[in-house]
Length: 253
Image (cartoon, rainbow, N blue to C red; front, side, top):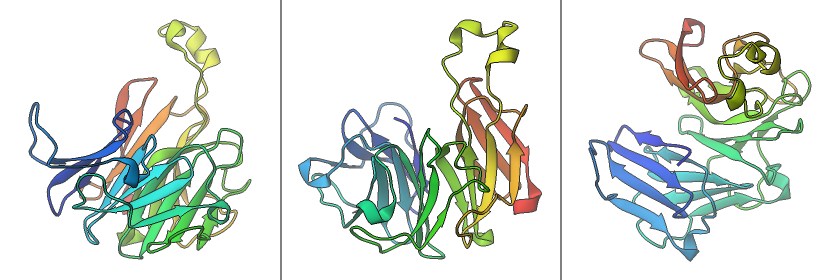
């Protein structure tokens, strides 16, 4: 399981499960071994290795990103349920690789991070009700954005109150398990990963408005990003360092 989403309105946890080819919904107060309250699974779902999921509690929908597709299901769907909508096709600009998805229910947007290791990463913004081979309403990509050099992470945050997208950007390091704790670490690992903040109204080759990290920075394998608006903090996970890092970032809140 590579992702998790929390529904604060209905107090539920939504988890994509790659091996089961399904989406599992649990009680927010789950503890120990407990069956999901609902699951979405079966041939009608079109689920194939669902890597990232998002819940929209305002519009009662679950969104799933997988290999160039975004599938939208009813939040209370249970069993072999067909998607309500499916965004896929050449006009979407989504590649065959990994995608992350977030919904902005305030501005009626679906925001997709389209991951590429070869300089083609994009932030794609679609109308929330988009269906089929839909063109994005806005695209952030290009040399100034930094996304021609570094791939995007698939876990990111959207903060509608300030029209912001907070996302991890950076190179994936090779397996460095054999050099942990040695002097080789200082010469072999790449610390160019960073957290970047864009505005949802940005379009085209736009540099981020704020960043955390960069050359020689804190991150080796930046994987997950979320926010804590109450305490004005950004929280990130680093897979190689096996750490969770919290940064004070009042400028974006």
